[in-house]
Length: 402
Ligand SMILES: *Cc1c(COP(=O)(O)O)cnc(C)c1O
Image (tube, rainbow, N blue to C red; front, side, top):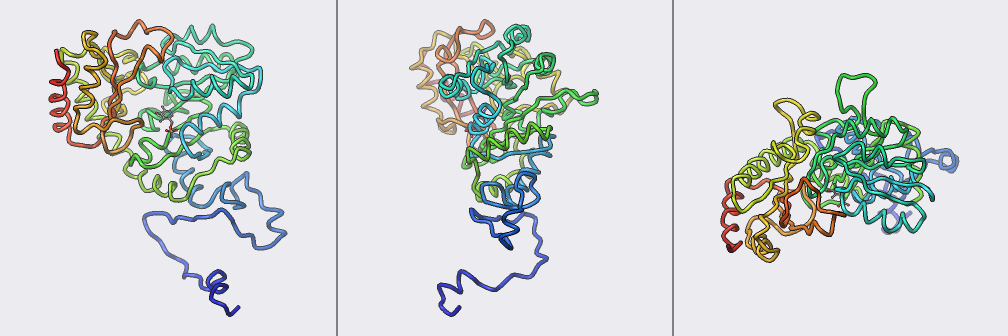
């Protein structure tokens, strides 16, 4: 070994052991080295006692998985390249041709699009249920139902369901339920222990989290997780995860590991600003309805209250408003365009406040009776000063016209 090309690849130096720092190290690998061929043949990746290939885990991804289990109160975790990949992994793992999946009417849109696309093409049917009516779910569950999706609150329209009752309905029918827990983020309520103190515990079977949102916190990482409390269920999901080749990059894992210590603080700050601004909107005569689960009068507020009791009850930094029907779509678009501090863009959970007008009529079968008519705009409140945000909203109202 004399040529630099060789010695720089097969270098003999090992740094001294005992290094410690607040942040965990970042291990990057597609290839993982084995000490011998025999070890290569014997190493088992499924139980996380060893390493075999970058796709199946590194110390960095194992570390992130364990912290996310702690956050959500689960026991096993899978990491995926996006929140939507986590949703599709759950669907592809738990559904077979001839099965049916039930999805709430107000679910995250791409979950519905997956059902109408790939799932339908593979002979898996889907139906939507009214998440605000547990009896609707009860009547729609049938012999074909293999999975029920839950979301609290629903995307965009923010209705908060009676999550405990929906889980009880699934339990009574022995159907698996998966919660999209992105809004709660493991902080607003405990998905595997919805009513602390009761035995046996009441919880969902699977919690999916778009880490893209609050856990990343930067608006610059795409990642998802699937958390469970049942080793057999986890193994079903994990085998699908392995066969589909869902892995994540070490730099992305590091970004989330770095952001997790400030998660609770950031969540609280997003929440406080969002509630203040949602209340401000309630006092504006341009607005027909404010949709924020922590505000009395909002659809499902009592369910949020019951699930998130006490003084410190948490909510995310999201809310929607419905403008009075006298304002046209163009006028509401002009309002959004004239905001200076709110970016126009999808997603949420980062430092910058965002705004998106939605065409609700095209998203729901029928206009829900609990929602006023008018153009709906959703806000994701960032970490800017709340006074500045309110002043910006105030000036943009002047661009609505009359
Ligand atoms: C953003 C989001 C997802 C998907 O996350 P991506 O990482 O963007 O794919 C899933 N569910 C909800 C509720 C979301 O807000």
